[in-house]
Length: 194
Image (cartoon, rainbow, N blue to C red; front, side, top):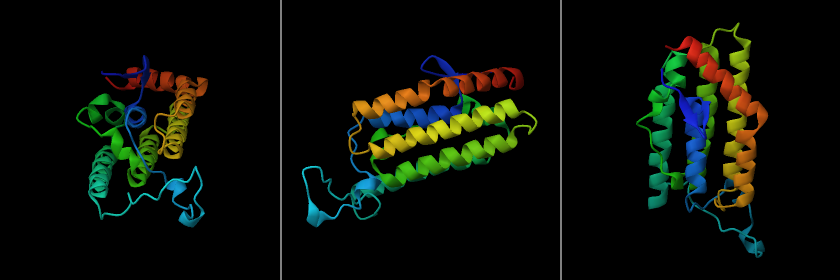
């Protein structure tokens, strides 16, 4: 059995996908944030951020965004088509997956990733024997933490090198509850997936 390791800790494939994209984002020069689109351009200030057209397919950046959304959705669909939690939680499920971190500048890609992570975790939870409350709880912790991580990514999309954002992500993924859930998942994989 192959166990996925991230940051020296065993974790699930879905966690690796989300964390990979977060790391990619904070290492790239991304722009765009859904929360800044509501700024009235007539009331500009020194902190006003220009409107970004990343959700429209009119320019080349949006075409790349649409392709990245397609890549994320293809991976999500592939994982949702698997009825074996061991196969979903094993790193082999994503070994050929790559996503350019700069594509996370697009709010459409961030939304696709967030909804995909939620869908894959929910699907995996449904595949786990329902009497295995410890594993189900661990997957729920991972799901919620990674959604929180992706929320940080969304909030800091216009400033991907922000120390504050990096600190928030680090706090989330090194928190006691998240680390314990990763350990539970690793033990479950070792016991149930040979």
